Image 1: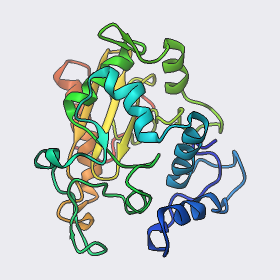
Image 2: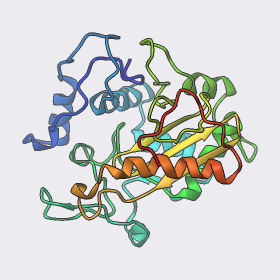
Image 3: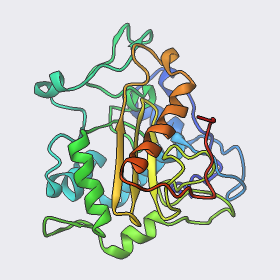
Image 4: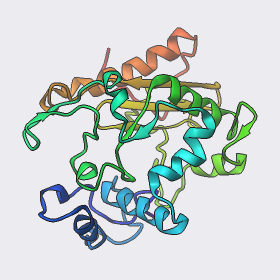
Length: 263
C-alpha cells in the first residue's frame, strides 16, 4: 500500500517545522494518522514514501543511500547519482530556490524540507543525478534489468514493478512508478505500457518499452523560488515529451491521454 499510494496516508505534513532531531521527526512521521482507510483512494503521499524508505532500511539492515549505491548505482557506473553530493561536485549542481527558512539559496543539498530535516536521505526525495546516469538506468530497465552484462534486477521484477498494480480500480499507479493516464506529464503518444515519475523541482523520466525509448527532462522549475513554477510549466512539460515522439515519427495518439491545453 505504501508503494502504490493506497495506504490512506496524507500527501504531506510539515515535519521540518517541529522542534527536535531527525529521530524525533521520524517518530512523528511514523505516528501520522491516516486520512482514509486502506484501498479507499489513491493519494500520492510523501509520508508513505518516507515510511517505505525506513521499512527497507529495517529489513535490509543497511542505510538507504548505501543500499541503492551497492545494488544499483555502483554496478551501473552511475557515478554522478547520489544522496548528499560530495563537496567536490558542487560546481556541477545547479541551485534550486532561495529559502526563507534557511536564509540562503539551496545548492548541493536536498530541496525538500522534510528530507533535509531527516538528514538528507529519505524514501521520498534527495537523489541528485544527471541525464547520462538516468539514461543508463533507463536502458537497464528497457533491457529487462540488465546493462553491460550486469544483472541488476530479474526481468520479472521489472515487469512486476512497472505494471499497474490495480490495488484500486482505475488508479494509474504501478509499484513506485506511475503509468500514462489522462493529462499525463509524458505527453499524448505514450503507449499504455510506459511508466515514469516526476519530481517537484522540475524533473521527469518516462520509459517506453513498446518503442524502446525513454525521455529524460531535467529542468529547474523552482528557481529562483517556487513561485516561479508557473502552471504553464505542466503544459510545456507535456508538450516537450510529445514533440520528442513526433521527432522520431511516432504520432499515433494514445486514446486514453489528453492534452492539458490546445496547441
